[in-house]
Length: 213
Ligand code: SF4
Image (cartoon, rainbow, N blue to C red; front, side, top):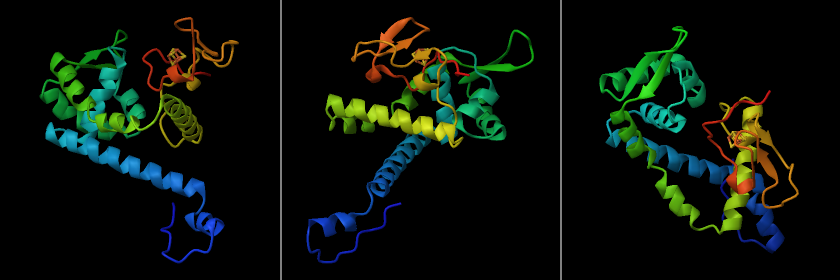
């Protein structure tokens, strides 16, 4: 983490740069501030809807799956929490009629699905990061693309270190074919939909994602 810069009189520009500390520490400080803003926003919205932060995350995670199969243990993996935390958070959601459980075809696992009420509630709580969307207005299109590339790289690095759950994003997908086209605007290919695409279309939470070997 960045250390606070002392208020000393500086002699010249290079002294100033030295006193500012390494770029990496300032980036970590900036990312930490964004993380705190996100946590506060998430908690505020969840509390306003009578939910815990985990319950709000469960509703949003299920709505992103768009009806695709999801078991309690897959949910725990996706949210990076333990199975007991998920099962405790699920109980009030069943009671409020926001989620229902059905048996999988083989009868061995339970599949979680949003009810129509749950889907509406998920839409309400999913809107909370809108303030970040407004903050992104401060960046031009090129800066947004560069930021997206950097965020994807950082998530991939954290996944490889086992520090965060695997996100359903293109670089970790078995259908992703990076840099296979000559077109600099669309160098990658998605073998699932059989279409070329560029960095600006890289997905971070794709319902069709299947983990690469
Ligand atoms: S299936 Fe989804 S995650 Fe996989 S490469 Fe295609 S768009 Fe990306």
